[in-house]
Length: 178
Image (cartoon, rainbow, N blue to C red; front, side, top):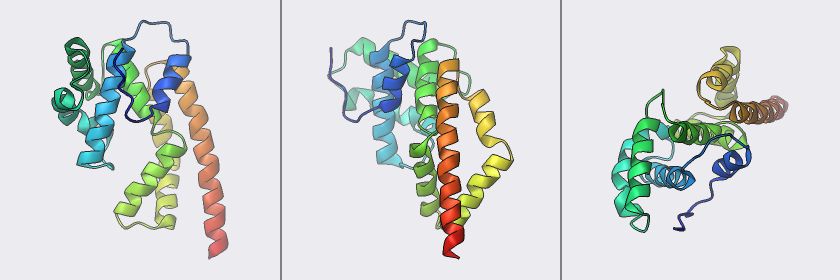
């Protein structure tokens, strides 16, 4: 087995433990996630993951020459299919669920805060934007549309509840500063 772990992928480990009833090419999925993470870091860490899929697919051979040609080929296909909003294979759906899961939870909240900071937004603007997302059902729509497997959707909903609690605490602290 080729050792690909250059960066930890906690979401992928969670998916493996969810007892999904399907056979998955975990090596190709891991390779696809690794190369997306590397490309996002090199291109722009603030860019949505789907926008990095094409450059990631084109970087596979260079970044992971130790992976088998078959694994690289499958990962490339997963990246191209994952970039679409309606993946058709279970492996591409797992890739999308793993990447979307990273938007839910504290990691996702911090990523959003970084994007706001890069756009010269301050904490009150960030919290206001988060509240707008809440008010307009952004997160509920993502829960409904972005996840393909119910156990992953439930995990994302749990993470979202933690984020809501954290955002409420930040808001209370912010209100106390004024």
